Image 1 (tube, helix red, strand yellow):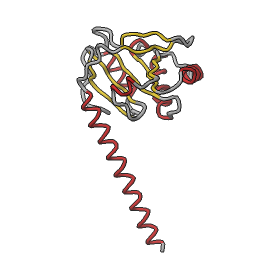
Image 2 (cartoon, helix red, strand yellow):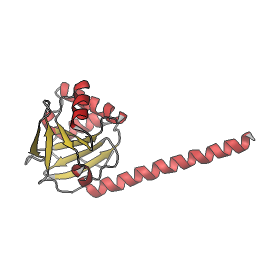
Image 3 (spheres, one colour):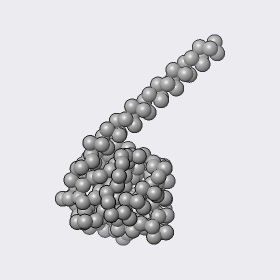
Image 4 (cartoon, helix red, strand yellow):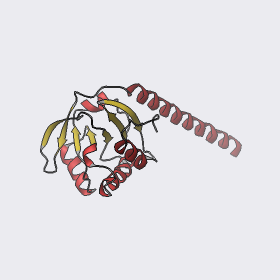
Length: 181
């Protein structure tokens, strides 16, 4: 009997591993297809600390930008954004170079969460998911690196190297090298 249970357990474990690999390959292929996408004409809705919203051009000419899609309920997002916040507090990156986007969530929930976690980076609200659809966001956190008005790299899921990657990308004069993490 225990041999049969052991065999069933192994089959389930292999099935889970295969599902994870298929998902990661799918995300990698999707992120590879996004590279080179122009974002020069996109506008975002910036969520101010007082709850007001103002439109802003996503890309400033000759300026790099990092978009991070997140959700207030997302555990990995919380870890990732805490690391980004620490980089900003240590003045290793400028908050002007980062935009954190919440899609499909209510303004009050986003504000309350950001205040509770003491986020100081700019927040954008994507209530109807227009940006999420533009960038094919299927999982959070999702980090998009933009240089010269084009997507140059995309990373989905928590990144073990987010601090190094952000410092390198935002502080170097050349576009980020290599593929997704």
